[in-house]
Image (cartoon, rainbow over all chains, first blue to last red; front, side, top):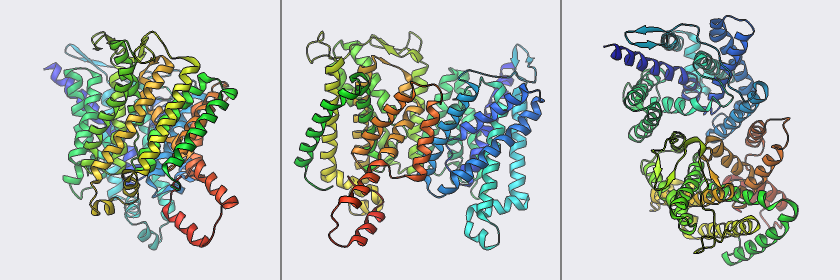
Length: 288
Length: 345
């Protein structure tokens, strides 16, 4: 009984962390079609921003939920103006340029913070269920992921800004004809995507020892989650994160964490082979 | 490509001979050997990406697979000839399987990139986790993060005690690179190579003309993997240890950067790009002021933004403008070159 609860919580946590990892990329890649291979590094910088702010005496929740997204969002803004802006619509070139950016940020972080592991402790204590100890912070991540999904859904669906953004992604010429500058909209959307990546990196930072190359651990998971999700932004994110999170945890509990990771990646390859348009290319068609 | 294959052969032999003679006067042969190995690795991606249009994010997987195959086989066999052959065959077979899965599934560019990336990650994670003594192939322990040290290095075929090392190993590598370069030229001059370029330019048209695009792409993919595997085995012999970092994403990134900087759609570009950038990295590694990765990243971004065709096509274009003969239809020819997008060299 206790074990069932623990496994259930761990599964929810795995799904939630996949949602967090992929949310920023879902906006940047899913909506804007910019293959951002520096996504992992944006998360890494979110983590470093949090740790630096906490070390300077800022409350950890303020640092995670406000400072880190802002910092990374601004970095994303600079990147968009300097590099990405020139490459919209050139898929392969964007891929290469953002890979270069990812290496650049790794090098920058190494120069500033050094090639050592830094970290902060989790702000929420753990508690026991029967004979098992559960990390209380896992619940925080689950809550953040749920709020994030609800927030994204309501912004995209219910606000005028969300409507304009979605319209401009579909037909930028139409948006321009109606008097909205696609250039500005792309800039703002990229800012939001980067801020989401920063938030994810910040929220996950207390759980991992942060090194400049930490981003590499997220990038593949984020991409396969978004691609396997398919064209619908939120439904795709939710369904593929759910699928991969459950697969990962089943194999983690049955065999070992490494096999869990490998199982996730193998499941992704098989899924893409069967559903090349992603999950929402076949099911939940036309939903947001 | 102008000229004929025999002309190519003569040029390659002459250039290789001159470089083998001149280069050791400037750079130590130990460093040169690894530059050659990287050059061959660059060529392997240059072939499938530049001429086949297959952007593989996991060329490092075949490189690492070649190195590991060599190391494991060399420990089990105790001689280097069969392991060398295996190091070419195993990555090629692996690539043929993977390629068949991808190309017969009609996956497009982006998915291709992601799947090759994911496969590289799987290999990296798997090899990294094989530290325990239960991971054994024959007599060889896979060794996890520490890699496999202490295997039999290259020897004269049939004489296991006659090691090839130092200067003579450099000559072996240089000649092998020349040979591979010649084979690639021959492949590209054959009808197979011309059709591969056709597929790169317009896949639908080639399949409507009756060519089996999927099979041809798979074969080309496997050929690239075979070259990468050979480079991996040569690297294993040079480093005398193989580690999981051979499979890492950083390694894959570097191969792509070499091709971009050197010039896609040329044979020489990736080789020069690889050797040049690897040497630059070697020089940068001797100072600690600026981080190495930062420079690599910056180079990639700047090249994509400002010189997306690479150095060799740019230089070739400059050469043509300055010295080339342009008998007639100058504007027309320029337009054609631009429309084609890439220069065959």
